[in-house]
Each structure stands twice: as C-alpha cells, then as structure tokens.
Image 1 (cartoon, helix red, strand yellow):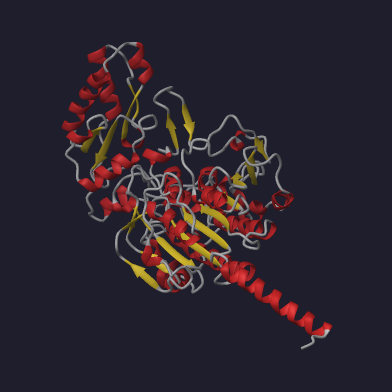
Image 2 (cartoon, helix red, strand yellow; image 1 turned 90 degrees about the vertical axis):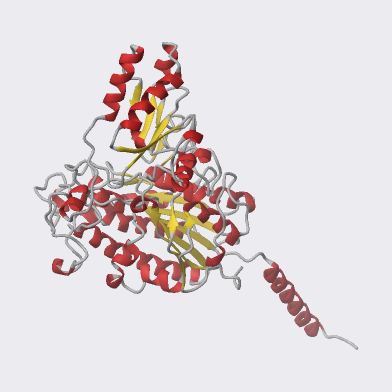
Length: 550
C-alpha cells in the first residue's frame, strides 16, 4: 500500500502529538505554584470568631473549598515569630534548626544577634543596616531548599514580608530572593546574600510609594462601628495608644501620623497587609511564578496583624476590623491566583507563627483569674548569687522565661556552673509565681507534665537558649500593661489555624485530630514529592491530601 506525502505528514504529526501527550502524562503530578501564607499572631479562634462577617472568597473559601486541621498546636516554647516561621518551613524545632527566638545570645561567646542578622552581607535597595540580613543562623534546610534540590535549582523560591525574619526564614538558604519592608523609607529591600541590586520591577514598585498612598486614606472601620459585636468598647484602658493620639479610638488620621522619612505607622494598620498583597501579586507577575515547567514557591507573611494585636489586643475593634479587611485582601489575592496561575493549579496553606493572650486588665474586669507578677526574679536571683559567689550580674537576662547566665563571668571567676544553677533552682522552686522550673542539665529530675516537657526539650538549644526554663501559671502578666504579648505554652499562644486549599487538597474537609506546626513541611514535601527538610521531625497530614491529584 502506497502513502502520499500528505498522508505521511498527517501520520507524523499525529505520532509526535501522541509522544508529547505521553511525555506529559508521564510527568510527576505537581502544582504549578505553592503559596504559603503566615498570618503573624493569628489565634486559631479568629477563623470562627468573625466567620459570620467574612465574605465568601477569603477565609470562608478556604474552609469550604479546602481542608482545615482545626486542632493544630505549636510543640515548642517559646512561641514567637522567628521560631514559628522557621518551624513551619523546616518541620523542625529550635533544638535542631537553631532559631531560638527573634534574637538570641550565643552562650559560647556572649555575642547577641538578631535571628536573621548578618554583618557579612550588605543592604540592597537601602543604605540602612536593616538590610544586613540573611538566613545564616538557620541550621537546616527549608521546603524551598529541598524543592530547589529536587528540580536542580530550576524552581523559583521567593519570600516576602514586612518583617525581615518573616521573609528570610521561610524562603531558606537557596532562595532566589527575600524582600522585606524598610519602614523609614517605605521601600522593599533585600541584601547581597541574594543579589547585588534590586530587580527593575521592585525599583518601579518602590517608586510608586504605595505606603504613602495607603496612609493618606486614614483608617476608619470598614462597617458601622456599632456592628462590631465581637469586640469591647472602642475606648478601654487596656488598649495601647498610638503615638500622636490621645486615645485608642477610631478614626485614625494616619495622614497626620506619618512623616516623609518614616512610614513605620503602616505596620500597625491593616494597610500593611494590603501593601503586602500588592507586592506579592507584582512578584508573581514579574517573576512569572507558576508559569514555568517546574513548581515555584512563594512564602508570604502578614505582619500587621501582629503589630495591631500587640497594641490593641484580641478583643479590640481594631483587631476585628483588621481581620475583616484581611479577609477582603485574601479574596483579592485568591482571585488573582485563579486568573494568573489557574484555579486548581496552585496549592495554598494558611497558618500562624503563634497566637496571643488576653490582656490581664480585660480578664480581671471579666472575673477571669489573672496571676500578676510582683517580684523581680532576675534582680532577686542576682542578689542571691552575688551573696554566694561575690560576683554581680551572673544572670544576664530572663528573656523568653529562661534564666540566662553570663558564662564569660562564670569562666572568668572560676565558678562552678552547677552550683549557680542549684542556687537559682532552690529560689525558683519556692517562688509562688513560678509554676515549674526546669534545669536543662537535669531534665530527668523535673516534675513536669509530659506535653509541656516535650515543648521545653524541643525549644532548647545548648548554645542559644537559657540554662533554666520557667513555666508560669496561665495569664501571668502585669496588671498595669496595655495590649498583649505571647511566647507561652498555653493554648492562647500555642494553638494556631491551619487551612489548606487547591491542588492535592481534599475539598470541604475538617479534622480535629491533634496535629502540630512541624507537620506542615512534610505535608508539603508529600504534595511536591520531594525529600522533607533535613531537620524535619514532623509527619505528613494524610487526612488533608486528595489521592486523585496525588
């Protein structure tokens, strides 16, 4: 049988099409883009506290179209930003990944450092020392690092946040870029760890001065202030007052509260979240994230929720309004992802680095038990140690509820370190304000519930943590303080939201089985079919995964 040239060409085209289809179907299934969203200081209950007021496209969309691990806890202490961001993206804990706080002291040298501080790099996009940052202190790999390794560094990995640590630690060591906000100049910056100069698109974005545009809008409630039924009155004594204003009340005339050489006020407004979404969309567009042959990764962290939470507290109209506005920002962002990457082509998760307590004055006003601090533990310990060893200031700090010693003094005067520990432990065990104290040299002797002991051990790094860990009673704070803090083991600090949506995720599901922050990274690794980070101790959350995609 004879074939014409035309018939041959048709056959050849059909054959090549089949081959290309076969190659495509043989390709390992993965999403085009992974987006990890951290909401700084988001308590787990915020998902449901304001649920009735959320729109359909933000938090509700994630809960309805995705999967929620509703009983997720942090299993280390302290619970703070630097640690939380590191743990989410490494599946590890401070004992292994080495980030033991937002800043910490090396016991071996006495040197103190920001958790992302690096004097060996230079700022890019600014002359400020705020640009001298890198992931140098992170001791393990992240999901982004492992994705890079798995694709021979053809995937793109970018981290962005108003906070330097919120951008740098999630992105990891081999990231293409991490960008953070330099509030004095109102610009997005980076360091020479990543590049020698800003990309043109970042420079152009900075030239628009979005911070000024947002702050000139001022801040009033999104809806009539009388509808904010989940919050206390607008003017209460336990809310902190912003600089330049006599009361913590709406409206906030932001246009009068910033200066041309300092846009830092945006950090304490919902507009800090909005400008982050603007920048994230620009990064996706200009870096063509999710458009290539290999999966890309974008880690974003909303920081303004933390600034507003610290100042006004979780029962304020300010925080309620912030989450209603964040819900709208998320809807805008998800719509953009649908358009740019394609609905069903990306995987997104949302979680928090820690929660927040209630203000002690608020609790007392509502007849809830508060344990006020009245003694000065560090001062008392130093007085006892000076009397015993004739050396002043052997306790250098009580940061993160840990007794930190000045090891240089101990070595200089030839003091027996264990004797110093013993003097401190004797005092601490008798102090009614201290529920438990654990000498990290004698952990086996501690009478501490197993769940709390696990968190103590996970949070302790021998060169970067204190010698003695203190556990206080719940709600132990000064009765005169305004705003709120965090860093404890208690559920108000340690229970966090964890919601998944998109490619590889079951739709409309919920689990109340206990899970942990460390489980996020191995779950992502399972979705991406890559090796978990090299310090990972978490377990993949099978219940959240959709077998049809995987």
